[in-house]
Amino acid sequence: MSLLSRNQLSPFIWKDFDDFFRTENLPIIGRNCRNGINTPYSEVSLNNEKEYVVDVHLPGFKKEDIEMKLKDGILMVNAKKSNENSTSSYSKSWSVDSETTIDDIHASMTEGLLSVTIQKSSPPEPETFSINIE
Image 1: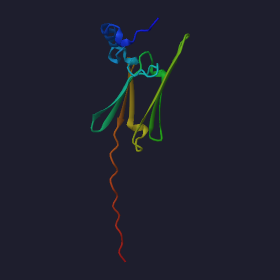
Image 2: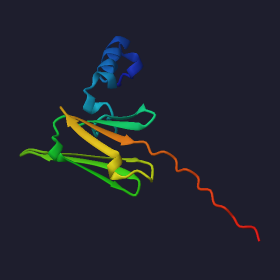
Image 3: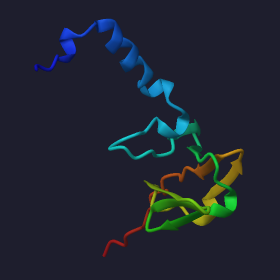
């Protein structure tokens, strides 16, 4: 008995197989699939020159399932939900400017989409000091 290599089989069979498992054909939750673990899709964009927007797709999660923290310039998002059969959890963090405060961050949840707006901090004005000449 000998095994056939992939190249010996009909290329049309493998094309259909490969096409089926391409990431663009997977639902949003599977697009970042690595090592067999599904992670929700997230993206960071510059909304205008003054703010960043982080969108995290969390289908099936409610805003009560999500916890957000800001600590030492790191914005952390943790989501966890449980039902009688399973537990789903998600955790992701992003670096933000060290001058960013909790007042600079606003979040909303609509139909499984967590949108986080982060005000871009402006660089501090350089201070000028007068020096007395003796």
